[in-house]
Image (spheres, rainbow, N blue to C red):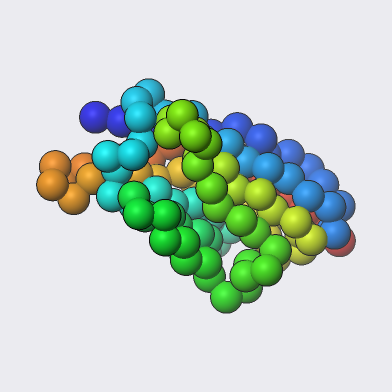
Length: 117
């Protein structure tokens, strides 16, 4: 079982930056994949970025070069550094953790990011 708590969202202007944090209730190194998802009003939830236990990272095309996903050295916090924010980045951002051997799929409650143009 993993509890996840996101923070760091807010209202910013286009071009500015935000860093989202996801605090986990346990060390994340045993988690197979950690990811950030977002959901805009009236749209489906979509993957923004993910990082595997081996450190492999993957991003959706629209955020490549602007967003960076990372974990801290203690292994219990996931980050999403977002630079050059655009209005289309607006949404509720969720942290996700998947442990395949346990069929675990855990979500945080989300943190709102609003980018004004």
